[in-house]
Length: 608
Image 1: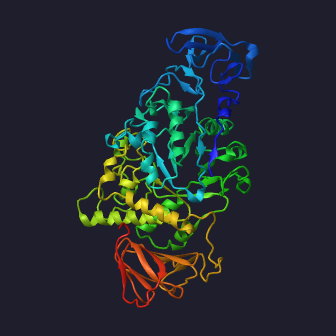
Image 2 (image 1 turned 120 degrees about the vertical axis):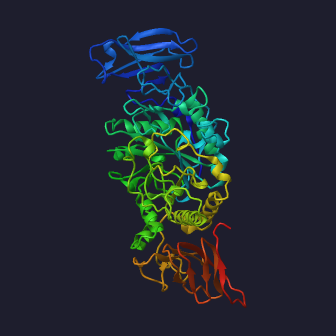
Image 3 (image 1 turned 90 degrees about the horizontal axis):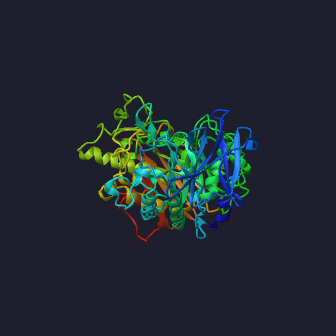
């Protein structure tokens, strides 16, 4: 169900008392002086946009002071012609809550000591923009950094490293089945760290939370370009999720308002809130935010049972739990650690009724998928912190050689491991998420914390998409398979009983013997069978380095098992058993049996 967005509210949504906002009576300027001198002359300086000449210097009167906030309406301010600064005596001050700024900064030019002239934004024509409103069970998320996504020369876009550049890649994302992109911080922030003299490339710091980042814009109008990007993605049926990071000392009270502001003004579909002591209960109580998705690493304080009151569509879940337990568990399982089957089975079926489980195998602050199978240890030496930064606990395995190698057997094993990883991710019941470049085997050379690199380390090299070992076709196939079979993306967790009355439970587990009650944690192989509308689907998984045999339940009368895909050698015998080579996953389905059908069914490659 799509929702047409009424843009009229966005032109008047300026209710936060400390924020400058346009009103029918003129522009209401609000200046919080909490961080400045208490006995000083305060006011607003107004400039002509075209000439940059000051046309008015308006001093606030004490009658316009409310606590530590001065607030006054200036009817003469024309938002199309004027810009402004606040001032304290003779010192001019940037409005950190401004909607936009007159100067377009290139990345690395941000100077917090220089006052920036601010603007009040002009209404944007949304042209009956429709929010896709994709249900959690139908989502596939692609996490990206706006600059790094297209700034490499190989991206082939006209507007590299910008919001327009991201929009130029819509067809690529859509072709993989992506339903939402999650943006690392894309609001204005200071990327220059004067203490370390390194870039804050990611942007996880206190921000200027009411305006898109000007360095990510190809034009002078960052706000308008951001709106154009959102509108283009919505037309393609793809949602925009924004990461919003708030430091521990930031006002808890203001956070819900900032999210409301972006939801209303910029038609954002959801937020991934990051930081410490986040006011989740206040966010949950916002009637405006009840219509958007909220991702967080903790739902403490949230009443998830009543979170669906204003949400449209078939999916009533509003919250997504974004934690790394799935990632670390699956990485350990992939490299052959034992004693994990029970937890692996749980994580693969985990699909809570009151929130979504966001599943991922890598992120911005971890090894990429390729590095996960290429490095045993982090290699963050170029960060300038003597390799002490970043997580030491990566649960990775280099497959026998640290870093790049020309050995065909090692590279083949790495490719197989990534294929296994993607199969497990997409065939788990939660919401799958990949990090930009996973589809083309992107590497960061073993750097699991490239927060300070504005370079080829973090810029996506699009040449990988054309290489033979690209994972792009595989992701397309897995995304399509997930859509085809409803049990992979249901709105609730599958039951291990015969709900449909077809003779088979929705979900069952199998090992050396069929119909095992629970996974054998001493093994590294398992069969997971799904039943839907009389058809059976069996996922055979062997993460041990040697061959393993699994038992297949006897199919319904008149049907037989058929192997459709595998990542290595498989023998599907006539004795209701399947034998998998080491580190192999196979997919088997039931089909109508021929009258005379004997012999073995074999296959070897899921990527055919």
